[in-house]
Image 1 (cartoon, rainbow, N blue to C red):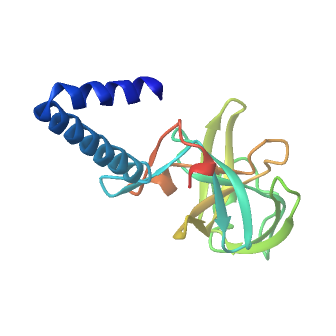
Image 2: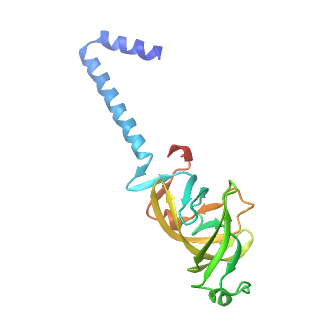
Image 3: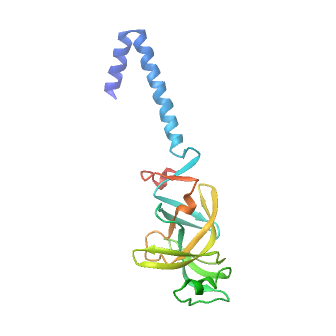
Length: 191
């Protein structure tokens, strides 16, 4: 701070031309800082999210601390005690037996990291085949309405038991696509 004051005094002593340049530089800096804070929220019409965001799941009226995963195709939510209503609740490990349940209703329980628990029923809209470190698994998906910073987006969400995982909601590319960019240096508190 002291160095800045001395620098300003030297500019005043140096003459009018130097003072004008210094004032212009301050205005340019102020304009740049203002633009940067705007850019922190939006870039080229896309909203900027961090690696961890709080997402409100409208269908459950619950908030989830979500991990943003650009490597995941589909968003996945903590779901357990799944029950296909009037369907096959023990499908074999082949896609035909899973597909028998397409279009049927599925009931499941979910809980966020704070321990809030809800039961939800939704229509099975697709069966996803997921490859992960444990191998290949199939998951049912239902449409859920996810809200971030007042912006609502209804998307297919995979149902998977995530009780042992830190983040009970994993946001995949189907939520990000065309609307969001990920800035890994951004904090959830920046919103």
